[in-house]
Image (cartoon, rainbow, N blue to C red; front, side, top):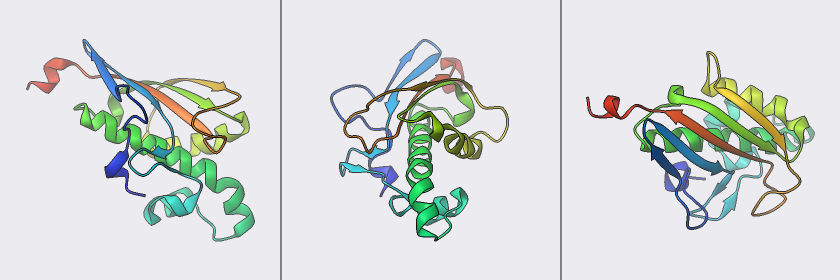
Length: 156
């Protein structure tokens, strides 16, 4: 699945991100590539390098259980990275994440992936369990991000 083709792009007619002064607000990002309408379902849907970082074992029972949330978490955070870079920033500019899960038991897996994107202190965050997400029950996670990206820094 090509991230460059669709990372962080909206699935419908709404903005992927919007600037308000020195803040950049990202729409909720789900693990779906809007260019191909493909939902990330597991390790097979992300690049080999990411699968290795996330700990793909090659054991069907382990990868089938952990793979969907690990791969979706990686795809969503990588999409946030692409989107914030399109806005002129970087992941360290993200100051808040709101994470929506279909199952709060997935949070520890997501947290493990988030550490790959925030080696130091992660952004402040809110975690919420929801009963459903669009476009289907296969979507396990959605993440909104807010970044502080001073306009003066972009003009230097």
